[in-house]
Image (cartoon, rainbow over all chains, first blue to last red; front, side, top):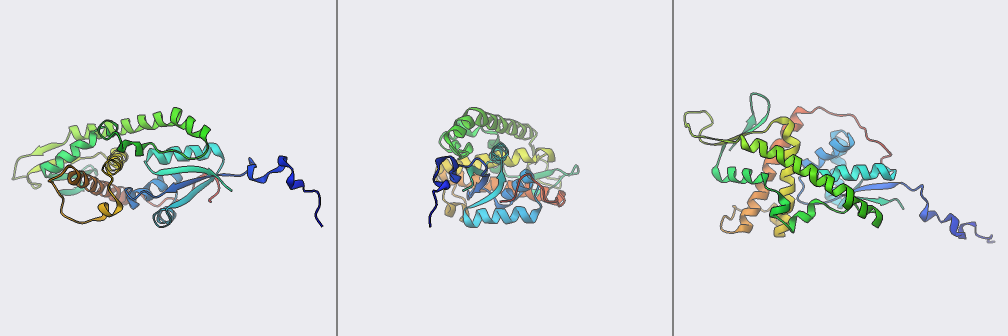
Amino acid sequence: MSQPGLLDSPEVSLSESLDLPWLVVVHNDPVNLMSYVTMVFRRVFGWNRERAKKHMMEVHRQGRSIVWSGGREQAEHYVQQLHSFLLLATMEKSS
Amino acid sequence: MIFELSNKGNPSFSNIHPLLAGLLQAAAMDPWERYREGSARLLPSPGGDEELLLDWQELVQPELRHHFDLERSLVAEDLAEMHEVHEVKQKKGEGWSLEIPMDHADAWLTTLNALRLALVEEHGFTEGDLSRNDAPDFSSERGLALMQVNFYAFVQECLLQTMESTEGEESDGGDGKEA
C-alpha cells in the first residue's frame, strides 16, 4: 500500500542535498610522467609511496581516480594545488 | 651527457652537447608567448558549476599563472649559470655544464612539464608519438619539438630520481575522507 510520498515533496529532494561531499578527480594525461604524478600525489596529499602509486595507476589504467572527498572549499584548494603541478584535476558533486 | 650529484648534493648535468644546451636554454621560454594554442592546456577548467568556473578564471588562474612565472624565473636563474667547459683535460670533458640547486627542483619539474604539455598540445602529438623510440628527426620543426618533449622528460626523470633517493617514506595523511 502506498502512502502519501514524503519523498515526493520538492523540499526533500535527495539529489540536491547540500550534505553530499565534493569529489576531487584526477584525469589521465599521457604527457605527465608516472613518476611525476606519484610525486605530486605525495606532495599534495602527504601519502606514502604505495598509496600515491595506487592512485597514479588508477589514473593511468582507468583514465581517472577519485583522490579526495569532502567539503567544497577544501576541494577547491586541492584542485588548485593539483593544477599548480599541471595535473588535470576537477571537482564534482558526489551522487 | 653525464648526470650525477655535485659536491653540494645538487643534480648536475655535464658534458652537455650544444644542441641539448640550446634546448635547456629554451626551458626559460614563456609558453604563453611561444605556444599560444598549446598553452591553453596549462590552465584547465576545474569542473564543477558555472559559478565556480567564473570565480576560477577571475581569481585562481591569475594566481596559477603568477606561480608558473615565478617557477620559470628560478629556472632562468639557474640557466644563467650554465657554462661551457672547453678544457679537455677536465674529467668531465667538453661541453656545457649545469647544476640545479635541490631547492629549485620543483621549479624545474613544473617549468619543464609546462613546456612539454604546451608542445604536445601545439603540435598535436599522440600517445603513440610520445612512446616511439625512433631516432630524432632534426629536419622538421615537429621532429625537433618531439625531441624537446622527450629530452625534457629525461631531465624530469633525473630530478625525480634524485628527489626520490633523498626523501624518506612519509606516513599517510591528508584531510577529509578517502573516496
